[in-house]
Length: 131
Image (tube, rainbow, N blue to C red):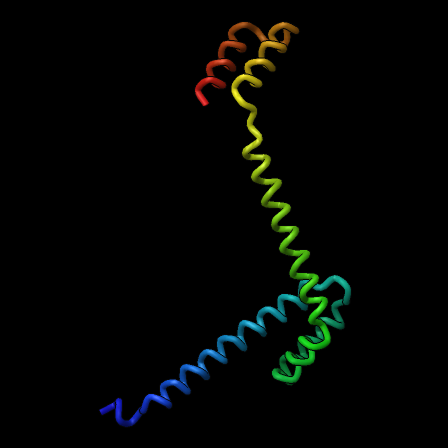
């Protein structure tokens, strides 16, 4: 009997409203994130934007999106590039292992200079060949 009291169009309308609410929360979170990420304005201006968005939610969000859309894009791109750069540096630091022949050659140079002993050279050689 529930199906007759709650027809398909009302279900569809409820799903549409729920989807719009989720999108609204997503936009609100991205705007708050952008406000806090900004370095070109001070704390007072950030506070005023937040108050504006909280007191007049729809108007505040739309005004912020219209007024700051270029800045939001630039800040998002900068953050993405910084994260990509950090990831690349991390991968290079982890993967920057010499090949076994280079490790053995470096160890041989150190052995010839007298910096390491024959036992240390053999240990480095075994470790390089084990990789």
